Image (tube, rainbow over all chains, first blue to last red; front, side, top):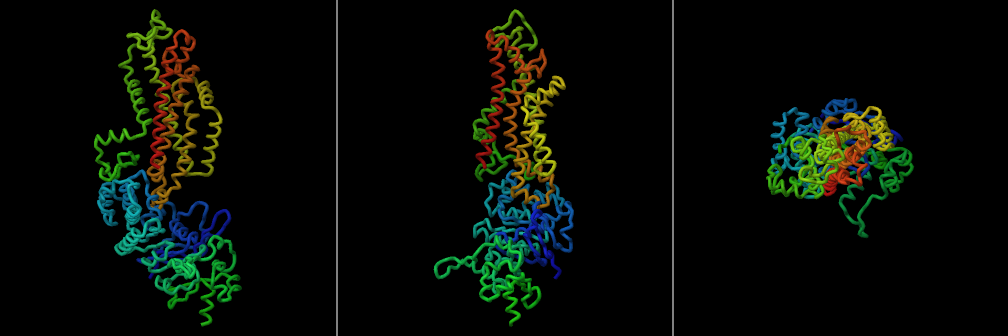
Length: 332
Length: 301
């Protein structure tokens, strides 16, 4: 199927030092599909989202790559066209919903903004539609809530309001940047449920960004794992969660189960990802990787960076960026 | 209160628990909400209201013509005919103060309003545009701030001659800079907050974001600053009139009344005390309002 969103070797670097924060990221989201992007802090998940939205901070620039949404090249849009894109073709959810609502404006007026802007509704029409939208995202007493100010809402309610706002103009793509991270687990489950339901109703695609594999497992159709500004493994959710190939993915899954070892210690991935960008040759995960020593691949991993190799039965099913797995396949 | 009304500042009325939904604020609630404001705000507001009402009604309630002389009644003390006595030419002090106050307060008010609007616009523009424009405006600010406001004002007035317009112009030239600096700082802080990013992600235009989200969220500190500046301006207007650069005789304002009374300080101290008090009380009331706004902001965040 023709993908809705296609990102091809996206590279983002700082203007002054040309440090590469995203390096050749390629992602594909089919219509009606949920692609989850996982990785630890600083892996470039949010930066990918901002790049798609053409909302990179001024100090960063997109130095290479192509991005298309339903055939439209996103990188060559003019400001006016970007405004139509935002909210109209791509909706966005953020991590801390309460900070994303203007404290001086009522909830209703904020949900109405995209209606007036993108659907050219009159204020009166918009006011009526706002109540329907709020009811649609499971908010009781929408008329009263529409007149409330953001500080009167709980985190879960605020995220529901944000969902209503992001989906007001029925965009074909929703980018959800850690939408449940700031919420407690019971509310988190409700919000995920709501997102799934909305996805079904509107038939939209979702780019779901998260650091939490447990959350991702409940909603994703496909998963892309990012490390230090690169996609290291991508595949269907089932494949990634049950048969992870990349040592980093395996380690992430190990971490997310919160299991303790014999001495009662929680499993952590040794080292930090902050030094990974400093490496200018070889595999970025090498210093933290167990497989390197285990499989006696030090020289290979050190010399060249592995490429994304297809390892699934069909070409796009499962791709992994690791010398270890590549070696294994060749040997087999 | 409708869904799509313009931005509103959050009054304590809307902070009441869920049992009293916003939009059904009764009169009783309103009184209670007013009294729950910080006391400097209530007290300052009350005093200022009295001052403004008296000044507005002056043409009808002033006891006598402010320019009418009665040389037989020079330096009279308080009496039924002249509540606050008379000056060196036998003119009624109360009437002169009421008429003079109209001048002082109007000039100070107009100046602060112009300064606040101009400074805020420039400051927000600087914060949004950045770059060379920002740099230029801020350096102009620095240069103007390097001179005391009085010196700049005296310079302008002595070049252009004394009149109401030049007085306002003179005070604006030196007066917009603090607003620009403050607005720029506040706008930069608000600009970095989440909802601005969210508004961008919804496709709001830049001007919409500034007017609908940035400005309402920057307004409180700017209003507080405007109130503080008003008292300051009132004193500056008085000082300029005192130096003969403000209002021209026979008209009077509080500052020029002080100046005229100076030679007779030992003979008739009331001529100095009353206009001095008028400046002091009015400036104090507005300053208190400013502090009240500040306190309200502090307690909310």
